[in-house]
Length: 308
Length: 273
Image (cartoon, rainbow over all chains, first blue to last red; front, side, top):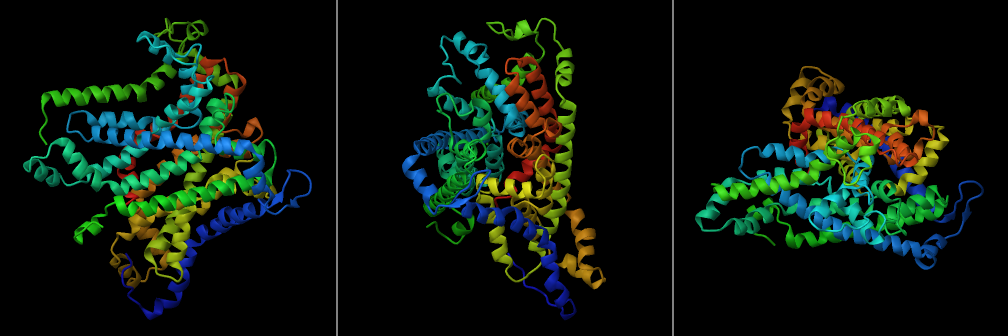
């Protein structure tokens, strides 16, 4: 929304330079901490770059190695996508359900809003320590509680089949941020819409699918994109909760890149790995955006008199 | 919307069930931290310790240089928050209140930096900071904050765009220079969104684990997150002091949240619109 500029000649010269002075911090930061490293990393991906010793130009060999000679690359990619495929829909639905619950007109609902959001303010280390202790297969309280209702819990963090589930459960603990985003959006829907619908005889379920969901589709789009990107980059929790194990069952792509860089000191190879994920994220974001025209409704469009 | 009694009961029971998932882990951490060694490793687990061992907290705090870790975390958090407030308010103001050449291109560039996965820049950044001689200091964690962050700038710009243009025109006629207009008129108006940015930054930086993990080597430089993680890595079985220190680490963000809940609730969604 650019307003028409009101020009005053005496200010013209000053005002030409002043804006650049204001945004100068970001420009410097962008060059030094973003663009510079971004270009360097692209160049490094074409080199065999050990931490000590000469770097050697090897063209696309890092990429060839990744695609043809490193089974761990595929394993990590598959695990990461599997995680995203479980985590993103689960997190989205949970956030939506919680947001609907805390918009219910019942007393004390604000307290629950606080409770649901609380874990989102503690993250990473504290989350992994607390959940690691709950999931502990010997002394863990979770398996004890399960045994009370007659379920024999698995060895969560030791069993390759279940380790990824623990990461999902611990990650979902921070669902509060997304819940809040949905919450404020749902709160913004004019109540008249619902009133009109109930006069027309639409039940709560019908109202939810015909009013709530279409109105919040832009927010759903935003949440889908941010959570896909976040899921594909998950690192802190695997580093702390499982260390990639057991049997590399949680050796996520982020950990794969991190270890190639800081454990195996293959800086060139790790750069190639990182660029590959960058491109995947770009493509995925584009696909989600492209698809959005079929399922996202913007208010402005509807006012113009039609959804596409 | 009218609500029946049975509807109410259903809503409350679902709310309570979900609350267990979000609250029980905190409670269990606290219960564990107050137990004796024997109680912590008993099976079936004990839900109420016979005599709550509050001394556990003091013992745990003394067992490692947690005072130093805590201090480092406070330094990094405070400094980055100052840096973000200064840099983001300037940059957002520039983008929101002026027209200039390449403005839209630059702004799109700014937004697109949010999509860059951090592991793409991680290695060159490490080498760059190494070149500056900043490895094993708090500088790599602090200095970048003085150059703004895309998300915060975006948030502030959205806010500033909605303020009528007459505001600075009047001040200009009165002879105020451009920086005075920013400083005296706009900065006070931005108090709300700046508080939100400060809070988001505090939570982000206080909890950050990967940055300290990569840039810091000496224990004397560790932040709380890194210190706690390394303590847990070495003394995996000392669950009581680990839990006690985990709770200590959680306290500052929870306090900040308690004071700033209003800003967070209003703020998170405003950004998408």
